[in-house]
Image 1: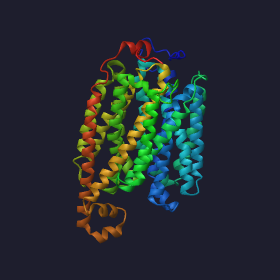
Image 2: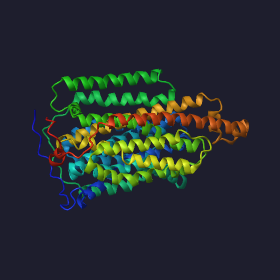
Image 3: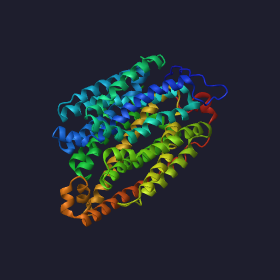
Length: 516
């Protein structure tokens, strides 16, 4: 058992309204949101540049896809290091290093001369981007204190929700008016502002230089996550799980992660890379299970929304991004309300309501066809946004508000690993489900291809194209039906989340259950 350093004193709250986020906390939030915007926007912005990379670099779709896969693998690999590094070097110093690395890597990406160099620079970018979100959660939680963590999570949720929505809009616009280089150059001014802002606003570091580093744990967990996610991300390309390119890295990754878990639970490691003893906290355990199930369902299915507008309705990339805006608007409506209510009544009721609303909106999408009216589709997206605003961040809140200050960096790291891995699994799952749905209908694939190639449309004829698009829409509907079921299943673990505000948490930052 080791003693932890005294937690930093949170920014004093307004005595007349103790739950209100004061000016100093909001200034810190601005720093964190800027960093999160860079990291999350870059994932979605690059997704719309894939066809451009293929044409400009004479690359295959699989080669171009590595500009996204490489970033994701690097991001997942560096997240486990963040908790230790934050304690060892201090959150302010590490956060500024992460922003600087991400910004410099963005400049390198803009200067890439072929697809191989672009992938390499994207990996460097992912190493910086992977630290930004867990560090941001740690900084914000420490600044505001546990009694206001619901509102803090609502602030951090803004870029996490709006990035996937406005990223395609920004990416399509930049490529249309300039070139793909600006997809990365846009990070330069944001990064410079973020660095100056962080230097001025973030509180002075109080690192713990005596804490040792778990090198063996790093050699097991980081490569294990990277190998597993590589295998999972290859599933859409191979079209099946039963392929050596999927099975070998995935099994290797699982074995490394299992070895890490066994070593962490049975060994006498003073400072493990990820403290699995955190799972002794039942609230955190339930929150992790809820996050895994939710991320698989929602983030996996989330990639299908723009695909439907692009492939079935023939919309441009920019228009597809604009059509997703109602989801962001819905989240903006409920997120501040959910953040305030979580601090007052606990996250359980909020999450149950949010999941139920998302299931209704996702269920609406399961009924679509090739001619479903836009008001219906936009209404369904708005409904899902309303539910989303009351789901992901309250789940994060449920986990982090029960942790002592010394555990916050490790807890936020754990939650970010969980979300990243689950989202990657969900993306692969729903890509395979949709692909298999297309294969079950002879005309679905050619009809979708005809949306981009008039020659194919002429060869098929208007009746065959219409029938094929109807079959493809049916495949989308089947995928959204699966998503509806998976979202509804999240209600089971969410039922066990706290449904009231605990006095222990408000007074001390955590119930006295976790001891290092």
